[in-house]
Image (tube, rainbow, N blue to C red; front, side):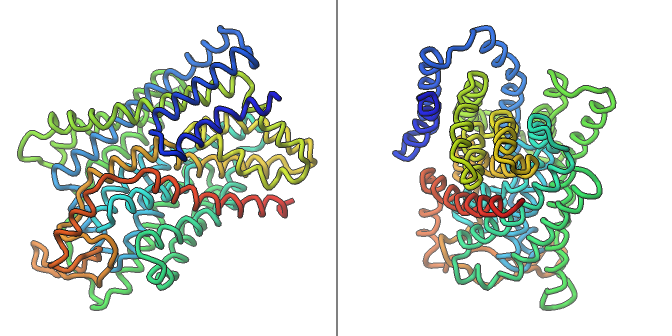
Length: 518
């Protein structure tokens, strides 16, 4: 009976989202359901509830700062033209549409997300995908599918929580999570190419896909094994970008390499953000500060806000843009943030009242068949919390206890929890809403088309060289129609269904691996 009640908030969320209810209203309804169940069946002292929510307050503030800073930075990069220049540079450097999409999806997004976390990879990737010519809805899907290294997001605090609560070695958990990530990278990469280019062109791009997946997975596994867990995603994304760019240079038709515009100043805000985060993290670690308000100020939220404030100067903007960009960002920020906070509150309530534990124990009662369901348990936590850390806080301990009861490897099942929760957090309602808003507001190339992909076009750079820029283009007579099609509001239900369908295939594969992985 208690297990059935514990599932109600989850069922309410999924049901309302399936019927097209806005994410915020679905989250509020699920939270109200959880509060009623807490008051009637899972009674918990108010002091414990208050302490849990107070403990989450710094995280909530940090999330709000990260979301606002990320949206503002994206707005500024767009208004100053930096995003357009960066997208054109990636397109010209890659020399093929498939390689450009893979560079953003399996290179840029994992790098940014592993460094900062909290969905920043999506904030960086989606405007680039729009510049490459993807329509808004497809750009949102591909951007969300790029969140594949979330176990190492923000330098891996979610994996650390899973290791501590699950009672497993941190580095071994990183290695096991890397092993399980191979099908994650392959399935999501294949799906991203199909969404972006169509089935036929995706099949023709299989070589690029295998190269990108091998670079990302090989680096992530090697770093976890020989260096340590936190930097695996950062170095994996970086190596993948380098490999794809080198492959493009080697495969250029003229063999001499195209002349391209310098890109240093364009990426200076991102470089400033990366250096600042790394320096502040080293300072905090040397001072022994691991939680509290200093980590908020010196974390991704604080550095994003500082970076956004300095971006006009870093880019040499000729006219004031910060004020208008901030007003536009604020209008897009509040609903995304409110939805995120409600889901985070719901995840905390499910954890502290014992509802998440009750659900996991009920699933464990079915015996060894539970191994097939284990990824879905982790996925529910990731979807609801929108955070790998939150999901592991809910379910890592119960997954470990279940493994012991079944005589199964605790480390393997905690890794299943870690990877599945991380992937599903990329499909949380707050992430989908954020991705949709970014895709709607990010401009595409002047002649972006809805479907067809044409060979790379040549353009002349300021230095007189020629560069091939692969974009999705429409014929001249279809430009007006294409512009209308790409400016329509993004159907968030289609985005969510598409991403969850791809994730479901991953979870089925992960469950099958768990059964044979003794």
